[in-house]
Image (tube, rainbow, N blue to C red; front, side, top):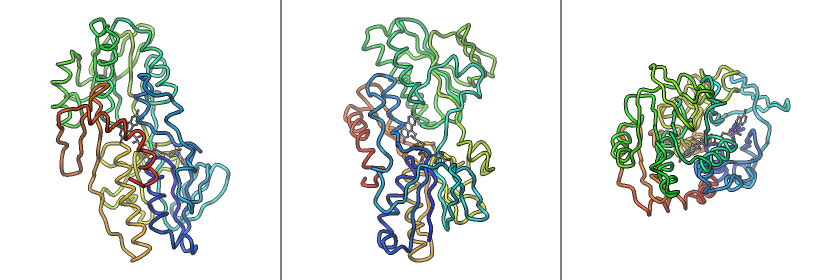
Length: 377
Ligand SMILES: Cc1cc2nc3c(=O)[nH]c(=O)nc-3n(C[C@H](O)[C@H](O)[C@H](O)COP(=O)(O)OP(=O)(O)OC[C@H]3O[C@@H](n4cnc5c(N)ncnc54)[C@H](O)[C@@H]3O)c2cc1C
């Protein structure tokens, strides 16, 4: 049985390690071969980018060597997939190598696409990339007064990030003693301040308490860097001194090029996590088209389900578990407090008041992530 995992990020790594342990004897006796293809020899802890943007972490703290995170028995190659021949059970890589498989898992993640909005790449800062987060911190250190506008493109990964960003901005400028000179204005595309209704209800009084202005139904149409204006599809505009954008995302280009899913989002069965039309192809994490948040935690819970099902199919011929849409999010509510939310397909999140211990738990989790991707948590 040949299992091929394409993507060595959060979902792919948790899945590979989980499978390597469940199928250790089958791998030793060569009944099972477990192969991972990835685009990089490094693994990035992406949530750390928000801390880099506020000078609380440096980029080197976000990386580990991918090989060092993998169980022995996983055949790892830095050689990105270029061609998917799903009807022939084959994947062809950049180096020209062909990998045949019996079961395939696609976990290639998503990417920012600021180029979809005219002027966004030139006019806006963003913390959704390493270079962007460092540049944003340099800009934050310089600004002493004026309007910081926050604009949100959709879809994007980590739905909580826009509210965490404004809480962090409030604390950053409060600590610098210049909060009264900085106007923070948040723009959100739908008719409330967050896509998850309970998060919107919880965040609104927090915004009011912190004096954060907001405009809803603001779908970013264009950024005019020369005049420092961001305009909406709805016909409104905001003048800014610094614009921080969460750019819209797409799936990876390779997914689109191979016609696996529009926009790079692969049609996925919401419980079995198989690709529509293919019983031997599983999809994990950001690249699914599922109605769940594009988060590391969703990728984690999905990976556990897929690992259990692939192992049980090998051992007893049938899958044993369904994915229930589970997501768990920490929500940083400033530089020393946080809350958390758990939700799934049926149950919306129930937010608790924020606290300092929850912030310190999140700070500990930033280190525990490396044990988590090894499958030890
Ligand atoms: C600023 C920021 C803050 C975030 N905060 C949180 C948070 O607080 N909580 C949370 O749960 N999530 C958070 N996330 C989201 C989380 O990081 C992602 O949702 C998660 O990493 C998705 O996992 P994945 O396995 O789908 O994709 P990724 O982890 O992105 O991995 C994709 C992998 O695919 C590989 N790849 C790409 N193309 C190919 C190819 N052609 N062939 C082979 N391999 C390929 C890449 O090299 C990479 O290894 C945050 C993200 C950002 C950017």
